Image (cartoon, rainbow over all chains, first blue to last red):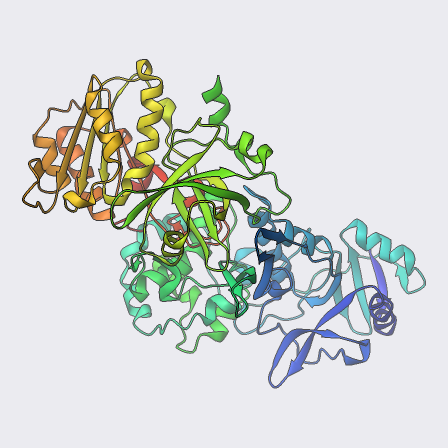
Length: 332
Length: 291
């Protein structure tokens, strides 16, 4: 059931929620917006907000997190506790909600990841529809610009008010508790139509990629690549990580952690005996782009890319995913 | 019946609340195979875990030395041994070097088993040619012990094993025993011989000329360095093996074993989930090169 909420009332709602939840909102620092914890709704200022520089994946898959701790004395003692912090993320764009849906698929199939699942369960997503497309966005081509599920609230900015769609039981509950702030409405507000600068033809993309492994565009683009891994770091769906041990000076107490690692880095495929499977940059660039636009589509039927354009924005040598994809399919 | 139950991987998935938690196991025995290879015999501390730990030959476990890290290592013992399990390692990495420092009675952590293991059902009532190279031998040892346990279900067997030099040959005791078996041809070769060595000299593919292997109704299984597997695959295809008759184990970095950490991604496959044992037919279609 859709509702309308005045912006002032919405900020009131955020303040009420902040009693039980950590509230995370895009905050401007320098030129970029980034998701950050805030204490009061007064800090919210979304003027000129398109999307954040870093993706919200770090609230589900932190840069560094403890899997368990151990103590080595006479006997070895292992203990683990699964994090229970509750969060509200406001201002997350539809593409990023879609990216979380893809991550859900990864972390709940085959082997369930209880740490991720617990975080996901304890997070309320208040998504915000885009009113215009950003310079690097190409979500329209991948169908990730609209949302049908995965959110608790989906807001559309209509001037002084937000048009609110509720997408979960948690959302309904919050509406019920704060009914004084919401106004029930019959009319439906459509998502604003977006115009994209960048486009990818997703039809037959898997076949195009399977044929194009030795296309000359790879060498041509990879020549510029400096393997800085910025693209993978900002990507909302790049979930690869390392599992490592960290100990204190004695080596007796420590923890096993997982931290982000990126397929763009040389060490990513290094095994014992110093054998590296993806030694040159072209192969590593291919791995990134293929994983985004081909592999998961082939096996699971969804793209691991949501078209947020962060990799294009962050690439300092202007390597463009959409350019590569279009070159492969023979466009432009 | 037991096998049927085993082939269902769901049943084997660890049911701990946190799948990253290793189970503690005590090192019961350390056997020095060569200067650089040791075999570790382990037993779980908790009886419940011990009773439930069964694996398929070819599967691997994540071995933790606390404070150093984790490494994926193939199991090498008889899969239905309820009392203990074994693995053999060469000291080439952080974790294996740390393992070499440990003594009998020390405790390490084990996660798993992970991976698919050999599709033994497909091997039944067929001849099996096993080609091992260097430290790729352990998973095949597990397979051989499984096959010898139910010998009547399989046809003739070959084991072609190539080591660097005579001092580098592992599982000498087992090799001696297997040589006595009927319908089981065990051939060993070394790349470089010394004065005492009287056996074959040359790379492992030269052993194919020493024996006659039929291509019909035969399965070729191999594990070893990728360069070796490349040439053995070529050799098998020359003899007349089809792609679906060839099985190989791929080595990749695997840090979670659960298809999440992304290190073992090759083409649209994850070595830790879809492998480490692959039919050559599956690998042929991959965009990324495998060796």
